[in-house]
Image (tube, rainbow, N blue to C red):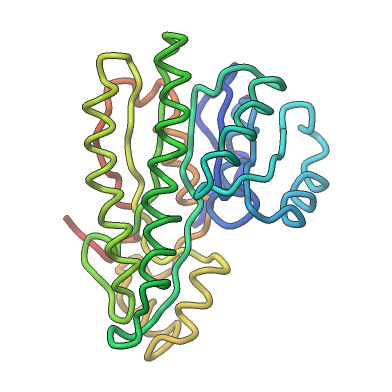
Length: 259
């Protein structure tokens, strides 16, 4: 049975920024962090989706701030972080959930396909993590950064070379950031989802051979994940319950990848 977004780990007093926060795993994380008592900045490139999310969260609106952010643009990141500081103070928890996945056969991958995936999934993760880390180190705040990779970044997937490469890079980036920031008390960990019921997954599964039935057959627990199934371990990693964890990857996939 999937979790509810009312389930969470205690996050009272924390200021948490979630990129890709207007849909899918990012949106579930925003809601779960709010339920845990955090002040949350939901950042996304889609202003309409941000507005709709803000309108649906009226009961906790005083602890929610939405801002348009393009993680591939360092000026956009700086502007959004400045707005977040003005509203809630220094961010001490970051979730890097913004991402893209476009299936393209190997022989049809263009430089633009390749670069777009690296720019958003990997370089964008680096830029926002670096920006937040600078604040955390400067203010001696400690803190937690959670990157989001994918099971496919570990085991591969057909017709997805740019996506797989970018998500595999997130694993290595997480370890490097964790080692660089450990002495400052900043923890960096990764969550790697399997097949999760999001708009992005639906578009991929719809084009895959065998569709949803083939996807389910590959999951020992017999169901695809829900966004809350990923938001819960993310909130765990943000919380003090994971206070001695850094440089680790949590594989959350219903048993489809046993490592």
